[in-house]
Amino acid sequence: MWSKYKASGRNNVALSAYKQNCREVSKPVRTKNDSYGANLIALNNLSAFYRYINKRIKCKSSITPLRNLTGQLCFRDYNKAYLLNNYFASVGTVDNGIVQPCLSVHNDQQLCNMFYTGKRKKPSRD
Image (cartoon, rainbow, N blue to C red; front, side, top):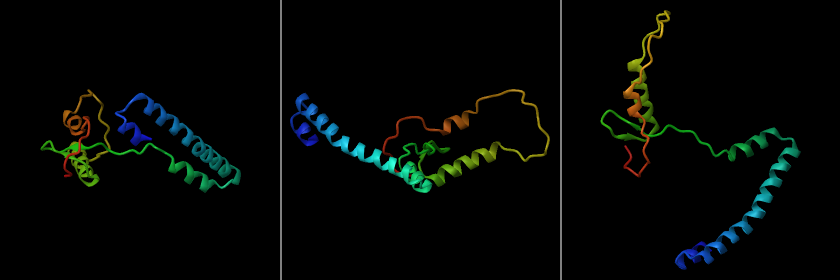
């Protein structure tokens, strides 16, 4: 249906037919998934239930690309860990057991510049 929609020059009739087809196909799939989840609960198998839930979690956390000192973006976890470790090692101190009063709070521009906030294009890997 999607191919027909694209081949038709993307007209509204083909689009509505595509959407209707999607709704019809998704109903049985949704019903099957709902009944599978209900059966897992009825079986009282906690580990199977957690496996089922964890497979459907959509939020995967990761660290965004970071800029190194030359301004290049780093995508690999090893490089990001190296950058963050170097930064925090440079601003950290050895604990001597004395708590200093916090006199002022300031923005650390170096840390702010490290995080890339633009849209990710497909650059070459570092």
